[in-house]
Amino acid sequence: MIRGTTLLLAARIVSAISTLALLALVARRFDSATLGALSIGLTLGAIAISAVELGSGGFLVREGARDPEALPSRLGAVIAIRAASVTATLLLLSLIAVWAFPESAAIVFVASASIALQQLAELARAVAISQRRYATASVHSILENVVWLGAIGILVFAGWPLEGALLVGMVWLVASAAIGAVLVKRQHIGVERPDASVMRALLVELRPFAALDVLTTATARVDVLIVGLLAPGGIAAAGGYFAAARLVAAAEFLPEAIGRTLLPEMISRRESATEHLERTVMMLVAIAIPFPALAIAGGDAVMGELFGSEYARLGWLLALLCLALPFRFPSSALGVCLTSLGAQGRRAIVIASALGVTIAIDFALIPAIGIAGAGIASIVSSALVLLVYWLEVKRRISESRLARASSMPLMAGVVAAVAAVLFPAMVPTLGPVAGAIVFLFVYATLVALGAARRARHRGAG
Image (tube, rainbow, N blue to C red):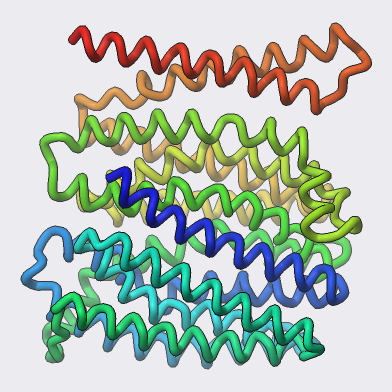
């Protein structure tokens, strides 16, 4: 599992760096309105992904691990469904771009369509992951992102308009999907042509996956659209908020990569599933807690260095958004657990509730306090999802000790936070950076001691 997680994490890191590098390039080469248009396009594209995928990626990973013999027929049906959904989604994106953002329609459409088309290649990677061919999925994803960013960057530096460079990048993403098809064939996995009855049955099976994907993506991304509509500065404000949000989202590739390898493990090795889950939750909580301290210490510098001095003032927003990570990291593993137990429909209900909370808080707070309102909505909705997921897993796996697994890093975080507040207060010349350093030192020490104690108890047992 560790090897698979590392490989998929490497691919996700490259994907995150590619997006951040594109945002940084546009922020420095174009004006804030262009960055905002790109941000809106990428946000619409992310939401469109769920319409294109219809939950079929997670479905293929789960069913391919559970029943490899049935994979060819299911893959054929998924390809047919995805081809139809891509066509419909591209048409819808073009209408939204022209109607809602007429002055930036070209950038918004090409950016959003590129993200949607990328899901064609994701099919091949889902098949590889289901067969535990993590290296194949990782290398394919890394190659796709590196070439995409390189092509766009070269053309932008050559003086091309952004929409033209993005269009060339979109053509490469289609070529990457063709490469993915070759990789599937080389794994000796056939594709059977499905009949109408198989298609109908699959659509019924995909409904909970599709609902979950649409709601999850909308909950994570809708704040950018609402900021663009309601915040002072409009589409330009959306660009700054999106830049900070993508930095935070880059950290979330870690729990996502762990989750993608945890799912086949929990399905194929039921006897050790609970132990896997407890260790994963404890690790994710321990990793997530320091992120707010790091953002407090270096948020201004990171935003300024990446996106230009104009955006250095948004370091506080980066720290605010990082406060959601200690809720989101363990939620990722708990969500995978619920999917492995066939409770993806229940997950969809939870995420739908979180989406409603996010939208309500956004509309209430953004007009009053600006983009900080969107950050608060993110924290509240993330906490809600974690609470309900934990209750659902506890109800289904009564022997799980998730609270106990999370208690050690949580207590270490509380003690470190107290130390980080008190130490600079006793030495007034020290600022928030010194407090963050104290937090990290105390927290790392306590977590290391706790892990050593846990290892001794396990060895004694």
